[in-house]
Image (cartoon, rainbow, N blue to C red; front, side, top):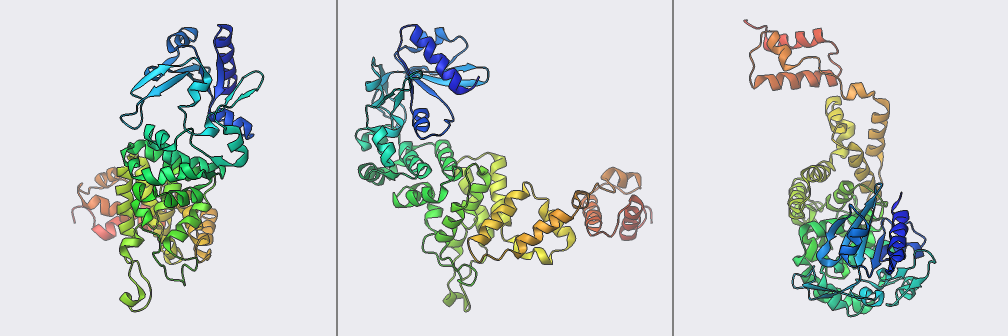
Length: 443
C-alpha cells in the first residue's frame, strides 16, 4: 500500500463513521500541478482520540495540536483535526489549540494559499476558501490572511516561502515579500536544525540559484549565511573567472545542481569559495593580479564552523569540509606522482569531488583538461592498482623481528608509496625494501 491508497482508505473509514475527511495541503497542490505528492495529509473533524481508536497502532505525533500519524504496510499519512491556533509565544507552536468544526476555519491557520486547498478523495472536488487555485494558475506565492501574522506564528515560514517560490518558479506576492523583508532578522529565533533542513531542501530541489537569489533580495541571506552574503561584489581575476565576482560564480554553479543532488555535494558547491572574501587581495596590493592566498584553508575552516552552527552530522560535516579543502587540487593532477594521484581519487565519495570540479570549470574558465585527465585515469586504471592489498602489515614487521613503535607507520607508508608507484609488487620485494631502508633486525 502506498501513501495515496492509505490516505483514501483513512478518509473512507472516517466518512463511514460520519466524520468529514478531506485531503489537504501540499498533496492537493501537487495533484493540481500534475506532480506526484511526496506525502499525503488528511484533515478531519474527528478529535485525535477518535482517530487513534479508529486506527490502532497509530502514533499521536502532535496530540496537543490534533495530529495523528496513521501507518500501514510501510505507508504513512498525517491526520489533523480541524482547529484554530491561539497565540504563538515561541514563534513556532501555538500556545493553545481550539478544535474547529469546519474545514474553512481550519485552513485559515495554514501558511500559503497554494497549501490551503482541500480535495474530496473520491470525487476530486476542490474546496478553496483562500484563493489558492487562482494563485496556482497565476504562479503566485501568497500568505494566507495577514502575512506578518503568518510569519509571527512560525518564523520558518519566511524561508519556506522562498523555497516554494524557487521550487515552483512563482513570484512572491508583494505584501508577503515585504513582510519577509521586515521580519527577516526574526529568522534567528528558529532552531539550527530546522534552518538546515530547509536550506538543504532549497539546495537540492533543482532551483538552488533562484532560491539563493530570493534569499539575498529578501534580506534573509545575511541572517542565515552571512559568509555567503559577503561574496557579493568580491572581484576575481578575469583570466580565470571571466564570469564575474564570487557571488556570480557561486550562483552559476548552484544553477547547475539538478533536483535530487546529494546534500553534501550541494553544500560543497555553495561553500567551496567561502574563504575568498576574507582572503581577497587586489591587484594593487599584490602587484600583479587579484589573489586569494590561503582561501582553501580559510574556507575549509569556515565550512566546518558553518556546519557546526547548523548542527550537521559528523559524517556530513567531514564530507562538506573535504569538498572545500580539496577543490583546488585538480589543477595539479597532471603533475602528481602516481601515488599522490591514486590517493587523491581514493577520497571518500570522490564522485562528488569530481562533479564539484566539473561545475567549477563550467562556471568559470571552461577548461576541462584536468577533469578529463582524472576521468581517463579512473576509467583506465584497474581498481586493484588504485587500492592494492597491502604487501606487509604491522604484524608482518613484528614477525620479521622489528620492534613495534612510531617507525612502523612510516615504514608501512613508504611501502604503500612504492607499491602505488609500481616499484614493488610482491611480498618478497616489500621485505627487501624494508631491509634495505631499515637494515635487518639485529644489525
